[in-house]
Image (cartoon, rainbow, N blue to C red; front, side, top):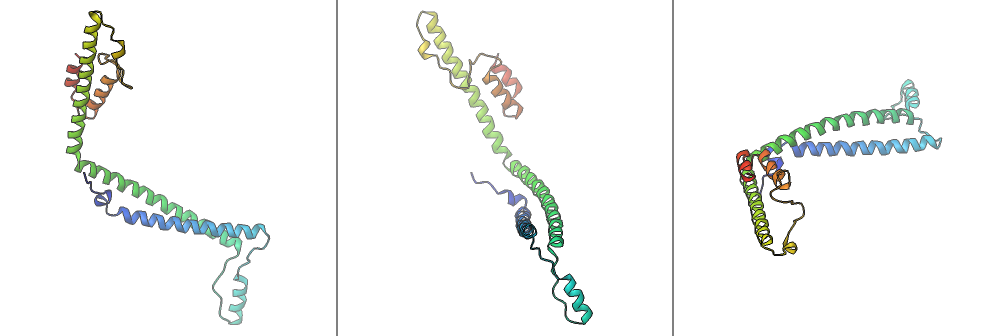
Length: 193
């Protein structure tokens, strides 16, 4: 079965994810720059910037250079920028999660009838399995009652216990189908009575 994509129910999702990726790339670049700056600071060769030189140029009437901050100032500026970008990523994450939930709800709603049909068929097949298991065990019990040794035929499928056990896996499995609306409570009671 071919399903519509979540993007078909939330057209903003690709744009939000792209913007988030762009912000993460910017954060990564700033963190790399911070690492380089810290390396220079630890090596005692910091960049002092050109603010002083620009002040002198301005006083002398010469054209000023594009401003370059000192390593200490640039590190602080980068860290502030990382904080702002990280906050923006958090806002985008929240919106992406909201859009994804809404898209998922719409997608589920669009295929709800098929979920119910298949879930009900599965519940009925599980109840039929229990019935066949019970029939098989009753047959072996009848053979055993007349003296046959049937131990080698007693099957205990992994995960399934005796079909008559009221608190066993069959009961809990069918009860789960009831909770999800694939099987009725009254049918469950009939199966175990």
